[in-house]
Every structure is written in C-alpha cells, then in structure tokens.
Amino acid sequence: MNKRFSWIGALFLISCVWGASASDPKPSPYTSRLSLPDGAKMRVGKGQIYSVAYSPDSRRIAAASSIGVWIYDADYSKEIALLRGHTRRVNSAAYSPDGTRIVSASDDKTVRIWDAQTGAALKTLKGHTRRVNSAAYSPGGKRIASGGSDNDKAIRIWNADDGALLNTLEGYIYWINSIAYSPDGKTIAGGGWDGAARIWDAESGALLRVLEGHQREIRSVAYSPDGKTIVIGSDDGTARVWNADAGALLHTLEPENRPSWVRTHSVAYSPDGRLIASGGLYEGGVGVLMWNAAGGSPFRKFEKGGSHCIAFSLDGHNLASGGSRGIATFNIKIGERIRWIRGHPTRIKYALFTPDGQGIAVVFSANILHIWEPETGALLRRMEWVSGSKGVFSPDENLHAVAEFNRTVISVYDVETNSKLRTLKGYGIQPMAFSPDGKTLAYSNDEDAVYLRNVETGALFNTLEGHTREVNSAAYSSDGKKIVTGSNDFTVRIWDAKTGALFNTLKGHTKEVLSAAFSPDGKTIVSADKGETVRTWDADGSPLNTLEGRHWAAYSPDGKRIAGGGDNNAVRIWDAKTGALLKTLEGHTDMITWVGYSSDGKTLGSASDDGTVLLWDASD
Image 1 (tube, one colour):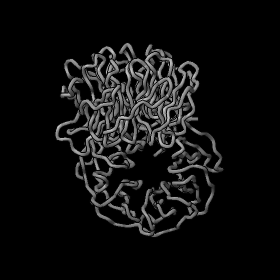
Image 2 (image 1 turned 90 degrees about the horizontal axis):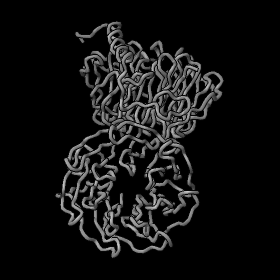
Image 3 (image 1 turned 120 degrees about the vertical axis):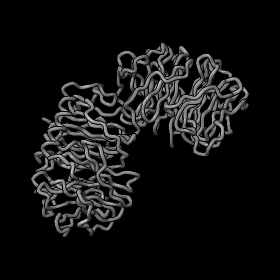
C-alpha cells in the first residue's frame, strides 16, 4: 500500500489517541465496575436482558439479565446496582407490591429474594429440578409463584416471608414460560411450550380451566387490572384476549399481513386497562405494538425498542422494553422513545487485546468493533466493520483481519483510516494469525487446511495440509519460524512456516482441539480441547503436563502462567512449568469462549457467552 505509514509512526499515533482518551476518560455504557467478582477490575458488556419490571413508585427498573439483576434509575437511565448471586442467567425479576423486595428466577434452578434498597440477598428458594423461567409476587406480597422448565413442569407456591414451599401445581405437559397472579390473588395463570394457558385456584391448587388456541409456544401471560380478561402472547405471532372466568376467546391481536416468522415475546396491560402492549419480532424488525384493549384495534407502534420483554410504569406514563441491545423507555402519550439504556448486547462474537496491551477489543452482535482502555473503561476507538466470528490484529496494530458475511470473506483493514485494503474470498474462512513481521496472514476454512497469504499482494504462497478435519486454531512462534495448529481430528501439528513442511503431529487429546499456542520463548506449546483437557508439550512434541480445563488456553507474556476457560464458567490459572493449579476465577454465568493476557501481563481477559468480558488483575 503506497499510503502506509511506518510501524513506529502508526504505533505513536495510536498510542497518542489512546493516551489522550485514557487521561480524560468518558463514561461508556458498556463498561461497569458494579458488583465485580473477586479479582476482577472491569466488566465490558452487561449481559442480555430477559425481563424488565418497574418498581411500584415507577422510579426504578429491575432488569433480569444473563449475569444478574440490574437496577436502573428510570428517569436518568443510570445504573444503581447489580444483584449478583445466581450462577446462571436470570430469566425473570419482579418487585413486591410494596417495593421493598425483588424476586428473581434463574437457570441455576433457584428463586432468590433480595432487599430492593440495599441489594442484599435475603433468601434462596430451592425445589425446582430444572431452570426457573418465571416468578411473581401475589398482590398482597405474602406468596411467590415460580414456574420451571424441561422435566420440572410445575408451578411452585412459596411463603414470601420464610421461603417455605406451600404447594406444587402440576399438570403441565412441557415447561412453563410465564406466570401471573390475578389482581385479587385468587387465581394464577401460566403458559408454556405446549401452546396452552392454564388457570389455577391459588389457594387450593385446583386446575380451573385450560385456554387453548395458540398454534405455538406461549411466551407471556398478563391479567387486566380488573381481573376480567387475560392476554396471552405466543410464538405464532399473535396475542389473544380471553375472558378470565368463562375461558372464552374475545379477540385476537394480530399484525396485518403476518409473515410466518413473526413472534410475540411479551404482553402487558396498561395500569388503567385501556391499552395492551405486545413486544416481539414483527415486520420491519423488533418493536412494540400498542392495541386498544376494548376490541383489540391497533393504537400505536414503537420502533427501535426491545422485543424480549415489556412493562408499563405503574403511574401509566411510560413503557419499558428490553431486547438484544438494551432497554428502551417510551412515553405513551407522545409516542416517542425518551430513554435508551445501552450496554446489553446479545452476545460476543470475539474479543482480543491489542498487541501493545493498551486496549481490549470486543465485537458484539451489532458488528461494530469497540476498543476500551482496560484500566479506566474509556472508549478509545469505534470501527464499523461487518464482522464474523473472529478477527486478529497485526503485531504493529496497523492492520485488522476479520471474517465477514458468514465467513465467506476475510477483509483486511487499515486500522488508522478504517479503510478496507484487501478481500480474501472462500467458504467458511476465518483469520487465525498474522506472522510476527505482519507480512503473512494464516487462515483456515471449514475443511482441513491452513492457507498462508501475503498481506500486501494477497498471493497464496503456501498451504498446510495434513489435518483430516476442520482446523480451529493456528499460531506462530515468536520468531516466526513455526506454526502450531489445533484441529477437530484431535491432533496438534507443528509446521515449518516458510516451507509448509510438517514437523510433528502431537497426539493425546481425545476431543476436538479448539486452541493451540507457543509459549513466548517458543520452547513449549499449550493446547486445549473440547473435553476437559489442557495439555502442554515440548516444542519438539514431547508431552509435559495434563491440566483440567477445556476449550481455550493462553500463556502469560513471561511464560510462567497458563490461563484457561471453557464451559464450566470459570477461568483457571496454572503454573506453566509444574502444571499446578494456582487460582480459579469465578464470575461468569455461561461458557467462556476466550482468554488472553495483555502484553504487559497486568491484565487477564475472559469473554463469555453471558455477553460480558471480565478483565482480571493479573499483576499478582
């Protein structure tokens, strides 16, 4: 490229930009230090939202997420607290009628009660045998109803004060997604996977009636404020309104020209009972539809909001909706969005440290690469690239290679100008690593080979062939002379980076090898598989240690430590020489998809399917 600037000039320019940002950090909605796990110093991303609920005074919003329950100031969208304690994602959160308690339901099979003012965990209700999808307070606040999933298939009734199990409502064929008490507390409605809603006597537990008619899974149920009707939202794209006493269908709320892919995820009545809101996946994207409760005629549509969950403020002024990017609040009277709480993307596509260690780069589901300063959380750069499942920086940080369009294209970008330099086409391709001099890009496809291309010319000059199944990882030695690869054929292979000759095949893994890397001095190799094994090897292929870990492993810059993570949701750190387990870092609520050290060794990063990256203090 004739406009390329020198390695020193690029590094100086980027360092200046980042240094200026770090010295005057601006708050980022994606970063937080609230309720960090022990050993962590920063969180990037706040987890996906699964339910929203206003406090009785309409001043706060409780949002159940994949990492805990977030509490926000409803007027200023400011985070107040993060209630952590559940070990898996939280599916539901609701305030008690007097606003002093919050109840939450989680994939960890528990229901928890929290002090709404202090955030203190008060009680943990155990009894469900599978994940708990929904929990709700009775109108008087004396009882809690919770519904389970999979083989649990029951609603459990608890004493809200002492946590005692009072009753179990059985009879569901499949799992339960949503529960609601009637306003007088005499009945409980629940709906789930079988497309039917059931109404129970809240005191005796007797099944009163079954409401059938939806063609697909029921996502949400809600009573009208007077208790006379029930609205039910379903994956068939409709919301249906029923007479609560007789069980008769009154009307169907159905978008015009409803395509087959339309879904209704959440429904709610306004406090005065005049409106019904339904959130879901509708034509034109996700959004919230408003209907007149009497007759079911369309009233208004709110776009650019969430679709997973909705809630009216109890003063009747606003509506909150949560989804794949955050929480939107709308003023019902003027029909406009008034607040937007960011930082809740669906998932992380990939994360990595910049080579100089001054930034942590993360691509969420929105396909935009953000770079944050690891110490302050300040946003340093924002690059709008259409991104796939993996990207890599060149060692001098001038270039970034990223998979695009479902991994049918790899694009090489100039980091400083954000311009595309070159495009490599293929099927199922993804970038693996730049060579230490930045002149070569190693990448793979959905087959069994690794390709080496000249970055400037795009010329293919070597193909590493020998694996018998897909290659998941490739890394250069620090001197650039060797490449190590890990594959679904259970092997690790070492290659000559110049000639492509195979030096050695390392056997011992009994599952697919997902990552492999050289130590900084090039004398050893670490590899992690899909099972429960991390292995270390001499560079000549002799086995050294077998560690209990999985999926991903990385050396510290001094080569003295190895960090690994996988589907046990924890990061483990081992002594690289002896294999002794030194520390276990817990705090993620879902599978870990990446771990890596910053170049100065002071920070360890871990990305998870819970939608967050945790930055850990690795200086000790």
